[in-house]
Image 1: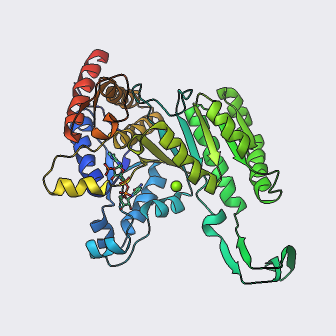
Image 2 (image 1 turned 135 degrees about the horizontal axis):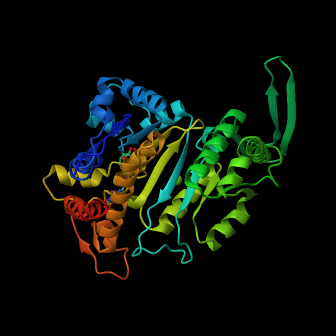
Image 3 (image 1 turned 45 degrees about the horizontal axis):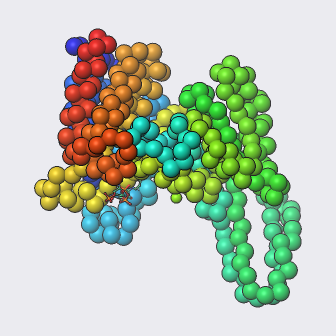
Length: 406
Ligand code: NAP
Ligand code: MG
């Protein structure tokens, strides 16, 4: 069979530890035999980030801007212990944070569903994607412990020196204070990323906040979403047969639980933090959660939602066989290849990506799975395999499926 060619390079960002090991194996076993991989390679592994003083992360993000699609391996976010372990020159920032700041994007997390792992919510039949606005609110708030009686006020001093003041509370005893903010530009980017992603997925978009209580703050989110939707997206949503609506966060929670899934739920920063953990846990496993960063002007960066699986990597270094689940990393590749194919009009590449996903699902439906899934599955007798054993089983199914469609 002739290998599939790619016209435009895919930006490839390599990473760390166990996922770096899997990254190489996935390419060798499932990609390179079938695709003439055309990637622009950036090594975001911690040693190379340190050698370049993190310039490689910036270069990779700029390349993503240039080409539009990238695939990223999980990377270590250094802390004090990592600085020591890798003898780093600095405690570099999270690569994901750096890339997100450059692309100004929103992260969408979607679970991979299989028949044998049933969601905790029995009526969920399709994945629910959470879009979290990863900027501002309590994550960048100023906080104060109020020592005792006194008056708290909001004070804004304009660039022209004009002051706006508003009373918060007259304290009669000690208490707490918090000042949080967001920016219209960031909210608008968030809204556009969500609308673009909904169109790309052909799925309904829900957005929830608490505008009945927060009449300025949350209401501004609601208004910016509504203005952008009306002006730029309404017609396209109608053409695509999908819907956008806003609802109160408490109503959204009730509707999500009663739904059968299959939509995108856009959340403010804190709501997204909490709800993404709830939804991903209810769907089964972090190892089955994919993630894509979408910029407001339509750049895509695909990755797994989990980290570098350090605990497994230390076992691997000791020569022990590991049973790390490569599903989310494989799906990062298939997501990126399918998007690259779609943008380039490369139908063969899109078809390959979807066939590889189907081969993975077929392998799992047959009960061949890594250990993390064995304890969760119902209705099949699982055959626990190593990471390599899983990749080999997927390859066998993939070859058979490609032969059938050839
Ligand atoms: P983690 O790598 O997600 O792993 C936490 C635990 O979850 C693992 O020990 C394992 O549990 C289970 N797990 C996660 N992915 C799995 C998979 N594919 N297959 C099987 N089990 C899986 O999180 P962490 O240990 O907190 O973080 C490790 C490093 O990753 C840190 O340096 C952190 O900075 C980095 N990180 C990177 C990203 C990213 O690049 N997007 C995201 C998060 C964390 P058991 O050990 O019980 O088997
Ligand atoms: Mg969280």
